Length: 229
Image (cartoon, rainbow, N blue to C red; front, top):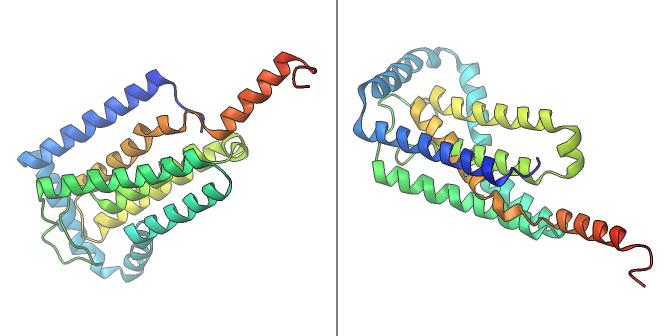
């Protein structure tokens, strides 16, 4: 994915920040339309899902893919690969994004202290409900991965990569609601947190190694064939 311009970056970060702030405030004050919808969805799914064991099993697999353990493992592997390839800024970016998500998620969880849905959960979960750590971690990893993909993938498979990132993030988020461990607003908040952290830290990639090499090559070509002798 090509680096966004400074203006578009600022607009996107501002929009995501406002969206997260508004959603957080609505959840914090218990705005009836939001709380009512959350409760209705949670109770409706709790009444239906126990009768569909296959669907529950699939959702458990999906939710495990987006678990903190899985996200930490995938992030660690990606960072090691990037370091071995000499892409230090990209490795630092991925690490910073993961730490950012954990910090924001933890602060919001303990700041709001929202309890989880009052239903029988179909998978294990602990701690507070808003925002969803699974949704935040998955979205952040997917977004950051799109920014550090090799050029050949970014150029030839951009649409497929973006579609896969969106599909995985939404699937993990939905699984948390279906399994009764989060409200819809929790996972929406988690997705916003993940995307916000992934986009906000992209300035770390402005001087990527590939860009520097390209600039060096261009400078040599402009200087002429005998400049380097």
